[in-house]
Image 1: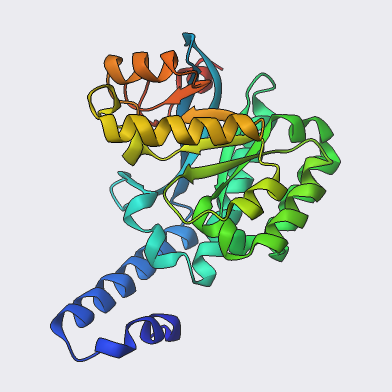
Image 2: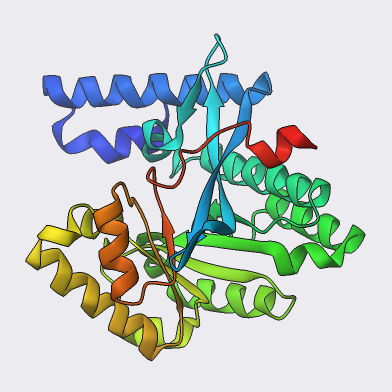
Amino acid sequence: MDQAIVEKLEPGMDSPLSAAVLARDRDTLKMVDQAVRTGRVTLAYQPIVQATAPDRPAFYEGLLRVLDETGRPIPARDFIEAIEEHETGRIMDCLALEHGLATLARHPGLRLAINMSARSIGYRRWVAALDSALANNPSLANRLILEITETSAMGMPEIVRVFMEDLQAKGITFALDDFGAGYTSFRYLKSFFFDVVKIDGQFVRGIHSDPDNQVLVQALVAIARQFEMYMVAESVETAREAAYLTAIGIDCLQGYHFGAPTIAPAWATRQ
């Protein structure tokens, strides 16, 4: 049994709920490990469009998918929590980066965002993959965006800050993912210099008719503008949400209203 799972659940190990959670996490880890061993890992691509020109994607996000035995993509939300604190989580970050860099190399006009955990900073395989790709093609750096979640970044702020400074000097862009969902210390936010902030979807859904979300998003927009960060709203699902967000000055929009993640985007299949 994975020791990290045991430690996480130890206070209530005798309860049926704890046993069920433990079994679920163990099964999820086994499923992901098996997918890694058999090469059933890929990226699904979702467009991030310009708010004032929604027919023009500004860039795409490469979202990690595990394929089950039938080839059906399983989204990261169904397994990421179970693997985040384990070696499997680091390997999945490496695979996301490797797939993303290969995609950028095949499509010179593409700009792509790839997710990573702050826990993968300094991980040997991840660093080697990035160094090797940039040595072969330094221009990839200017088209690569690394997304780090707010919760992950704030867990080790000094390490993240140095990591970002080193890679930004090479031309890589950084995005703070799920902005507003965690517990940002604004003292750290001031020193991070994220290039992009992605406003968490819980504040975006129904924003056109939700006064609370309107106040919260306007506050997040004011913070992003103060620090000169490009703003993306996540989980945009309706035209009315998109219209409101555009009116308050959001730069880019991402969500099912503009396109679902797909492992076979048109620009890839055309080539």
